Length: 455
Ligand code: UD1
Ligand code: CA
Image 1 (cartoon, protein in one colour):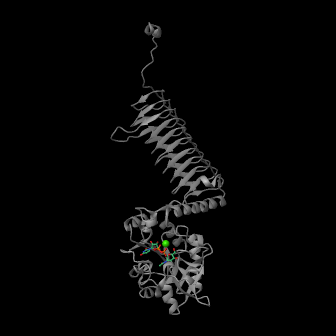
Image 2 (cartoon, helix red, strand yellow):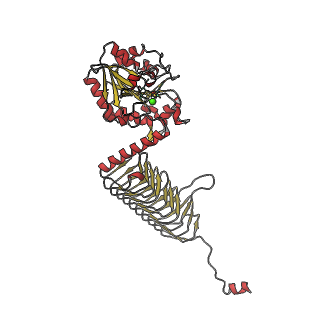
Image 3 (cartoon, rainbow, N blue to C red):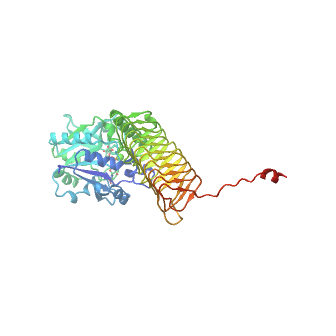
């Protein structure tokens, strides 16, 4: 177990988001803001992660589940008060407490690890991550003495004109030794312009005691940007998306148009796959090598093998194995497995079905709740009739079967190995292997019918 743990402040409402959802649960780059922060903390080596919740507490707790511990701050009386709520939970802890905010989704573990390393190397009891901002408005200012030692942090609303001129700001990211944190917190009060208990006052209290307080400016302070509005959320989305696409390209993936490609952080793609424009890859999607994905394709939690082509396809919670061709205009719904060499589409929907190797469903079909063997040929317009109004039933189509065009297969029903079904049939009884099933009225031609009716 490492000597580092994280406390993530996430009790605020986020008024400027104008949302019923707690601010930290707004999604960006495919996951909630607070999940990004949690992942960065873990990436920095934090062994325990405690999230302070208040507004919409149940929702935040539900979203993070067992990935974090939770402390309730019933009333949001300030950032110092928020950290105070973790005191009893941290009684037996003797290491470093890293304090983070839940609304900074651009943070990366590497930068936090560097902060922690510097905190340890300096042997400080408190280290503040600062940033030199061209426009520091709104932030707390870091006040240093003539020797450059940190004296205190002053909030914008409490600052003198001279303090407002300081361009080094508090990013809201800190390391504190647990041994001094709560004692110092017990010394803060709310006699300031906002009537809040400020965490930032801890810095002044420790500095006044001549304890070692350190402040270090972040090289990549863009990572510390807090999100307060929908416009900033959209900015963060752009940054995260670009970061992900950059990583993929570095790993050998071709992205044809970075402005119209949307890939969640958790998606994995092997080298020599090409992503065409207007493509969304979401959730836990993984894609092998040598694939052509898009244009106009959306994959959610899809597992895609090597050398797969997906054009104009929407696929979710399904598996597509090697050498499969799909599209255009195909919907693959949950629990669908397309085995090696399968071809699906145009205009086909497949749901909760296994499609065996090298089978073809080339045009205008609905295949639902079906177990299909290998080398099956499904004629254009074939429908599995899987729902009787009350229950779903399965259709079985064995290896090598040939289903004629415009067939209804009324489930539960089995078409045996190598069997044929005549075009236009509505099949309600099993077709034995190697048999021909035909179920349609015979055609009659009435000679001279037109002439008779025109007379
Ligand atoms: C804080 C810092 C400021 C710094 C800025 C960086 C203080 C007093 N000021 O200001 O120096 O420049 O962050 O972004 O700390 N929260 C709670 N409970 C509360 C209050 C806040 O959990 O009672 C959470 C919020 O949900 C948010 C975070 O703490 O995630 C920061 O609070 P916020 O009110 O936004 O602080 P700032 O005014 O931005
Ligand atoms: Ca803020």
